[in-house]
Image (cartoon, rainbow, N blue to C red; front, side, top):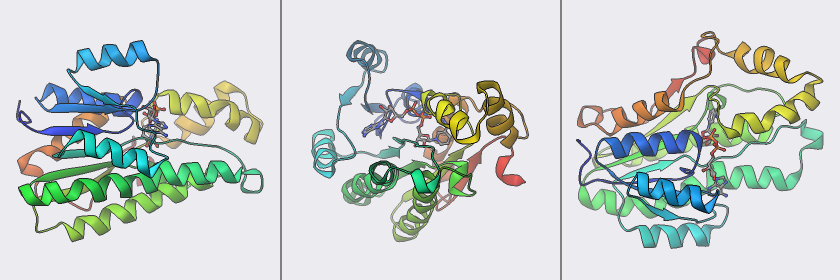
Length: 251
Ligand code: NAD
């Protein structure tokens, strides 16, 4: 329980990877703050399971982010995890989808970070963990907004790691390959359409074809890495981009 006494805000923690990170941090004693959308009853159950406060802020709106950060109070661990995807050829890519993907996957991280950093610096300890993606290091067709946002997130993380290097605050990216979550399931129909493939072909020939291990990453595997980054022994690990992608970006 080495995180007892630490407060961790995990954005997009009502589902998928964020929920697994929240569970992993809670298991080490952190006070977890939840954020994201979903069924009210399910979120209430999660709140009970994790003894967690819940913030419904829509991270597309900087004013809602500011309200959440104010109500949350000082956080020791900030996990910027909320994200969204849209799959379409660039000439058909809806401009409003582009704006939303950049706003959620990149700009929201700037806002939560700028608001969390002063208290971390004042305490001389902090952990900023950004869920990036293999797509922060490499590209796939039809995901222009997502690839741009995640590459941007990698650069942003490196910049703030340097800014905070002497303050006891670290900043790192975790970059999963394909993790079986609603985000991945949701892009299968559009990928079927964009590439003219069946569901099984998308899963095996597009998704798992990228991962030499030929299996989806488990959300708990990402949670375990987030826990490691919070350890004292990880105090010199900053500005890094950690792949959990079954070897995808090694190729
Ligand atoms: P998910 O769809 O299961 O979860 C996304 C979370 O973000 C949910 O809690 C959702 O409610 C929340 N969210 C969505 N829009 C929001 C908004 N406007 N404001 C606040 N919260 C919002 O997806 P996931 O697969 O768990 O993805 C989590 C992160 O991991 C994302 O940043 C994603 O890009 C990244 N990622 C996922 C995979 C994968 O294969 N699933 C791979 C690499 C990176």
